[in-house]
Amino acid sequence: MYVSVATRLAKKYLLADPQTDGLANEPDLRKGAPVSEARMALTVLPEAMAICRLGPDEPAPDWLAHNVFYCLTHTAESLTVVTLEDSVPEQVECDRGWRCLEVRGPLALDLTGVLATLTAPLARAGVPVFVVSSYETDFLLVKESVLTQARRALEQAGHVILG
Image 1: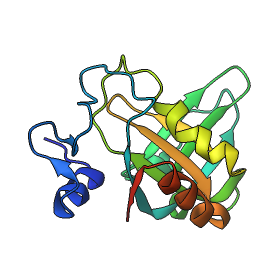
Image 2: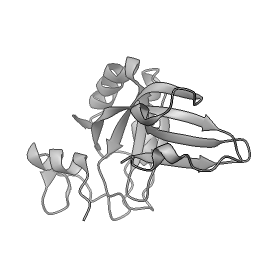
Image 3: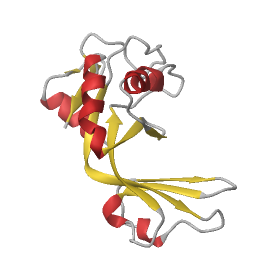
Image 4: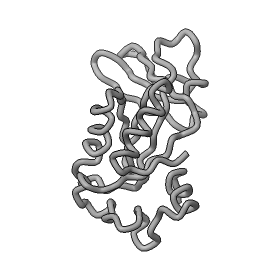
């Protein structure tokens, strides 16, 4: 069973309620409750990330084969790759210097307001965000240069930032 870094750190620092596997005194986010007022726990992943643009007809690149984190989005215009910055060859068109905040999950797929409750404080603070979602959770990418500002905005909104 996969246990995210956020889950391990939240338990280590006693932020988790063992009955709900969520933040203490918070709704169980696996059950589809609205989260507009919920505090979320996020972990800042240690690796720098890159957002890359490949041609729409290009296959998934071989340099992703051994990565622990990547996301592919294919449209008629491009193949977008979000992955660890260190794995991206220099010649690939990409925007480097992003940091990833992993939302503590798993989150139910029918939750409403998860991204709104996280991106609204970032928008008020003027922090641009790039979002990627998985089946279990969401990932917010912010530029390294505004990571401290993003942390502060999220913490002031009541969210818990680990790492």
